[in-house]
Length: 147
Image 1 (spheres, helix red, strand yellow):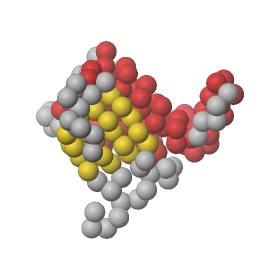
Image 2 (cartoon, one colour):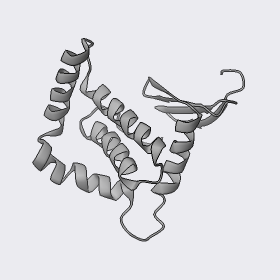
Image 3 (cartoon, helix red, strand yellow):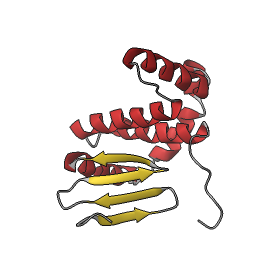
Image 4 (spheres, helix red, strand yellow):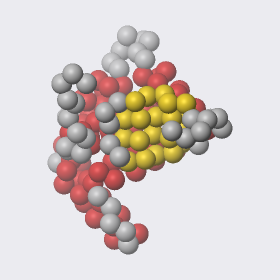
């Protein structure tokens, strides 16, 4: 463990550590993401926004309706769409990008936007949506029983 780092979460595929400077390191299925202190604060606000206080649909419910509903009608089949995005980005930057990385980078984009206006619901809805889309496309290991 890194000196001074506080382990926040540990699971089979998720680990989070907070450092004395306020930054957070996330590891999800072997993919590492470092959040600076402002981004880490945004993520904390995200957890508050996810709590349904108004009695309406939760962000999770809304994201599920979107990725299994209208978006497929307008954007096409998710795996094909993510592959097309990956191919375009690969051509633009000259580095191979996978559909899984497209989901991770879109989550990063949404977190960056959320840092500007942390309580804006759509940022969080899209962030959850890309994570759920990654699971739908088989990029996330299924939950094991008893875990």
